[in-house]
Length: 388
Ligand SMILES: [Zn+2]
Ligand SMILES: [Zn+2]
Image (cartoon, rainbow, N blue to C red; front, side, top):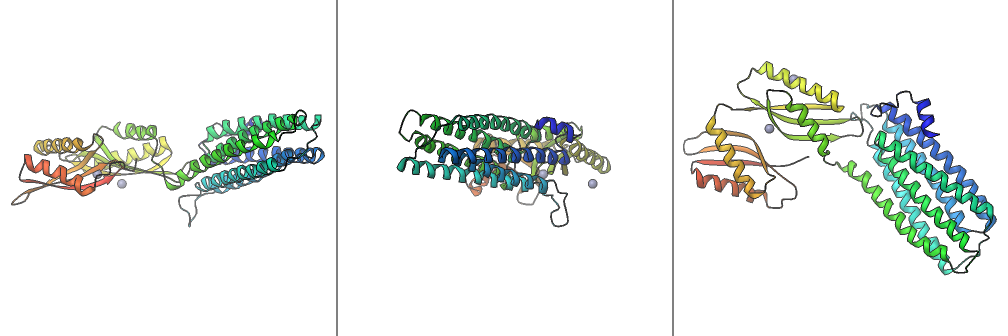
């Protein structure tokens, strides 16, 4: 039904990167979620009151809170799709992460509430009438939630939405909690033990756990995560496919939400090429990146003194010294400034974040190894921490 609506109402659903399409798909999934949850809430609330089952009423309230979280998701999509304006030139894409965070907080609250009422149920067990209509509505609820989980996962993957993934995880948790409620209601026919309450506690822990991991998924892009390996490989492939470029470094990717990525990088070019020609190449690479990766790119060019064989040899030596500290360390922007008493070798050294050796010590190590071999070369090193 949801996929049918999307195909009918969103003509461009085959271009999921398009912000307009994302917003429409998100809105339809959200609206259907609200409709289903309110239906389930009304049905279970009536049934819960008729059978005196706290568990069924609790399950009904759970669906009501889901309707609330779907409303938040929809507002998030609406705001995230808003065009950039003077106050927010990077657009509003990150609002989607914030609404995803709110949804995961709601999941945590549900887990907490479920735990609380379960413990109360252990202390004060209540008698429940197990009726056919009550069992029927719980089974219907399971089917609806299975479907909701399916379509939310399906479309979350297509439009890459953290908020919809959180909704799908929530639907899965609802299936588990409704199953437990169903078992508890049936068990009242056979035992006086508060089985439902004990299972409820275990369930609460599980729901809390998934709420916390969904929160982590949305907090991380808010703080800024490194781009994926595949994305970096694609950048490198596109840049290096242009013949005058001999290497790249200092890649930085800022992600302001879907469809609004900004890339900057340094491209190494021979110092002996025509400036107009190289600038033209760089401009073309920026256009290629924009077209193929749906981003904005800024490229800084670093001239390489390819004719100076001594410099190349010294660079290789410095690189080898750096790699004795850690294989992942790289160096770039290597240049030489000759002087009376000694010659400065100036370069940047990129060090992974997990290397805890102090920057001073890192510089000292490479500098001393170089001085040992060439007493008149003094290394001036700038330490960079990688953004990727
Ligand atoms: Zn550079
Ligand atoms: Zn330019």
